[in-house]
Structure formats: C-alpha cells, structure tokens
Image (cartoon, rainbow, N blue to C red):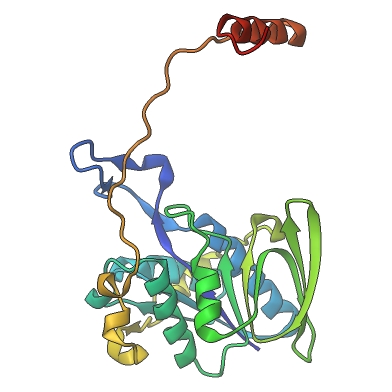
Length: 265
C-alpha cells in the first residue's frame, strides 16, 4: 500500500497580523509551522504503515522553505517526500492547488492507494483541497475521519464525525480521506529521525515534472481571487453582567431590555 500525505506550511496564527494600510496578511517576522491538522493525517498514515505495512510519501506545495515541514515529516517517520514549487504556482486558490497536488500524486510510484489530508488548514479554513484532489483523481472521498481501518484486500472502514454523531463508511481503495484531531495523538520525532531527515534529498517538482497545464496553475488557473483581507471591527456597547448573578437575574435583564426596545410587551 502506498499512502500520500498532503501537508502545508502555514503562518503561526498566534502571531498573525494584518497590515492596516493594505489589509493584507503580514508574513514578515511570522514563524511558519506545519499545519496542526496535518499532523493528525501524518500520524494516521504512519499508524497504518506500522500496522499493515506501507510506503508513506509526504507532499507539500509551497516556496523552498516548505522543505522544513517535509523534513519534519521525514523525521517523524515518512519514507519519502517531495516539494511542489514553481513560480507558476504562485497565487493558487484551492482549485488550482488541488490540481497541482493531484498531478503530483499521479507521478508517484507505485500508484497511490490512499491520500490523507488534515481536515483543513488553519490559514484558509476552507477544507476544500482534500475534496478537490479527490475530484481530480476520481477517487472516492471520506471526510472528518476519526478512525480508519484497512484490510489486506484494500477494503476500508472509516468512522466519520457528523453533527449528529458518528457514521461508519465502508469502501474500497483508492480513496481520499481527511482526518480530524480526534483520530490519534501525533508522535514526536526522535533525535535520530531529525538527524536522518537532514541528509535526505527532497526533490522539487515544477510544472514540467508534474506534466501540468500551465493555464491551470497559479493565479491564472484560479477561478477565485482574494480581493481584501481585513480584521473585523471591535464590538462595543451592550450590557455586561459580572457573572455572579443568578440565571433568573440575567433573564429579567434581557426581558427588560426587549421591553425597552418595544420588542415584547
């Protein structure tokens, strides 16, 4: 079994700032980290490899510095890694990103049986890339998976978190799966893993290596555009209670306010 794990380098959201003049994200001086949700996807891949035997390949689309998170994936136990980096990829939205990742997965040998994603990235929060890759690959999709079991015949059973509870879905590989944090606790990378990852060559693949159509990549291949990013205005006004009142007092205060505004009699 060959498992591809798609990971992303994102800015640490604890330090994200917005430029008040341009309303754009200020990346200068902001630490970049492995997308936290992708840690669970990587752990799911490594757990499946430990239990059933498999090859795990980590993929990331981004600038050259994204190699840092690929080395982290190797340090934690991934067998191989590749960086998808090309100036032609700049400005890609979720659709174009999905296309590029799918093209990379098609190039992997042996053929990929399972593609894993974290449920979403903390910078965009769209949760669209995993489903997009499944469309480009024509693989079945299962989202928000907390437990995944795979048999020797390629039959899988997935527990997915739903608003109303848990749903069990069965299917046959190949498939694309997005993983939630309830799936497992990510393992730490041992010192030997870190040392070994520093000596592992990570290839960089661009448009040519991926056999991608340039018009479908980057900004020109993106049907959506980010017009403006802005911080929401600070809310003011209203009535605050110090939290020590009884619930009945809060109810009385709300009813009095509604009567004052003429909403109730």
